[in-house]
Image 1 (cartoon, rainbow, N blue to C red):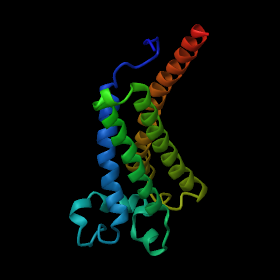
Image 2 (spheres, rainbow, N blue to C red; image 1 turned 45 degrees about the horizontal axis):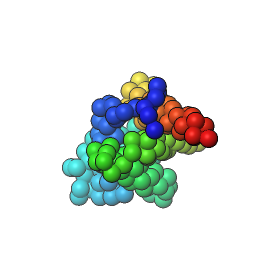
Image 3 (cartoon, one colour; image 1 turned 180 degrees about the vertical axis):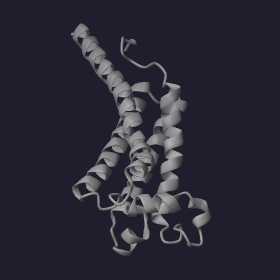
Length: 185
């Protein structure tokens, strides 16, 4: 197949950087969630996750309240963080070792990973919205926006941009394949 308008011959640096950095962050997050109560304030491993001491007050899904209520959503989303990271690292591996993989195949894995990130984050927001802001409604508006909306919004915005970039590439490759098939007939 020849390269056509709309395809990505090489993975853009910003996409690779997002997959690497976000994977490290979500692995850290999964570690916090799956290690509770030891990772929480006063826990024996809290030093690793000290920034979560504030976040657990902003979003009580991360705090003692959800843990004591045996609310499994935080741990379930942490498990999905592991799946997300595995897909991100698979994409990076496929892009890095290109002779073993076609770019379109890697981009399908990357698109899937970004889709999972967006879906997981939108679900997280919707759970909060449909629960009447049960876990964040206690915050002042400024704290809510600065410490919850903006950081969590990045997990929708950037992967959404990746979905557009890789989705365009995948569509262009499918169109080109169809054109090549038509020419061969």
